[in-house]
Image (cartoon, rainbow, N blue to C red; front, side, top):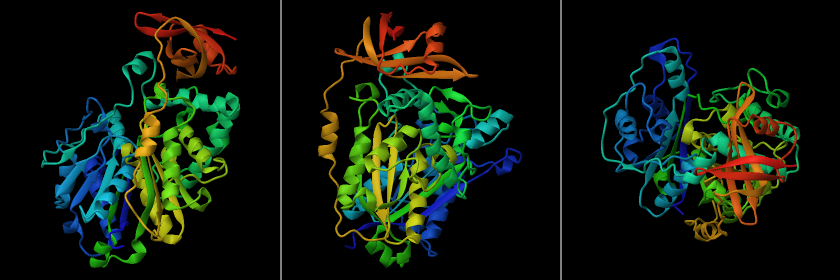
Length: 508
C-alpha cells in the first residue's frame, strides 16, 4: 500500500552549556532548527525542505504556563521563528497543546492524514533550553531570545486543564505532589513497605541510568546504582515522601528532537532509501478523567487501554515487543505499563533513551527523543518491534505506538471510541466536603531540608472520596506521616473548615 505512513528521518540535539560563553548559550529557536536539519539530513542527502506541507511544533514549557515566563525576551510565534529561519513553508502549521503524550499523538494523527492523502510530507519537532535558562538566570547573564517572526498558524493553546478547583484547593498541584499520592497508593497495592518500595523503584531507575550513560544525546549520562538512588543524600535529597531528586524527570536540559514522516509513495518518489523506513503499526490515544474522579488512584485504565489497543491492532503479543520506550516522569508510569505487559520492571529494559530522570526531561517533547531513538534501534535490528508509551498530565492523556521496519500486513485508521467510552462511562466518584471519617488511599508530603513542610491525604468511605490538606502547623501529623508506619488502609478523621478539607486525626 503506497499510502502507508513511514518515518524516514529523525534528529536529536543536546547542548552541555557550562554558562561561561554567552555566545554559545543554546536558545529555543536555534536548537529546534538544528534538530530539523539533522532529521532532514538523516532522511536524504537531497534537499527536502520544499516537500514539507505540514509541520507540528511541540509546545515549549514556557508557552505551556498560565503566565508565560520569558526572562530573555518574548518569542511571538515559535513555529514561525523556527520554520522561517529554515526557509520551510508548509501549507499547514500546528503549535500543539501541552502534554508529554503530544509527540506520539502527533505521529498517529499525521499518519492518519498521510494515509487519507490529506498531506504528503510532515515534520514533528520540539525542544527545550530550560537548563540554559536556569543557569543564565542564576548567573545574572543577559541573553536575547526575542523573536518577532510571525505568520498564520493553528495554535491549540496549552490546554493544561488536568486538575479541578477542588483538587487545587485541597492539595494537588505540581506534578510531583500530585503523582506522590498515586505512587503511595500503588506501593500499598503492591503490599510493599516504604523502604521496600524505595529499593524496588531504585532498581528500576538504575536500569534507566545505565541506558542514559551510553546515550550520546543524554543530558545526564551517568550510571547511578540503586544503592545511591534509594537513600537520601546531599546530591539525592528528598523532595516528596516517595521521591528523591533523581526519582523524577529532570527539566534542566538543552535538548531537541525532530521526526520526518511521509508515505511509501512519496518516499519512493524522493528516492529516500528503504533502509531508513520505519512503519507505524498499531497505536491508540485515550484521555482519562481527573485524579480524584478515578476509581482507583493506584491504577490507570488509560495506560492499560492504549497499550492493549496498540498490541491488538498490530496483531502482536507483549512478548513480540523487543524494544520498549515507556514514559518515565515518575516510577508509577513504568510500573503500571509493566503490569500491562506482564514484565518485571526491575529486570526489563523499559527505555531506549535512558528515561526522563537521566536522559533528561525536555518538557512536552521528550517522547520525540524516544521515538527517534527507537527508530535508530529498529533500523539496526530489522524486523523487530518497538513500543512507545507517551504520558501527559497526571496520567491524564496517554498515547501509544508500535513501530517496525517490517511493513504491516494491513493498516487502517484506528477507532478509539469504545475505549474512550469505557473511561468516560465509569461510575462517578462523589467528592466530599464535610466532617467525616474515611480510609486512606494515599498521601503526599512535601519536604524542605529533609523536613516535611506540607501535604495532603486522599481517602474513601461509603459516601465517596475526600481530598484533604495537612495544616502546616500540624507538626505532629506531618512528623507521624513521615515515619515508617504504613497508613494506607487506616481510618482518618477529617474536618471541613471555611471551604477546605483537613485531616485532623488518625485511628490506628
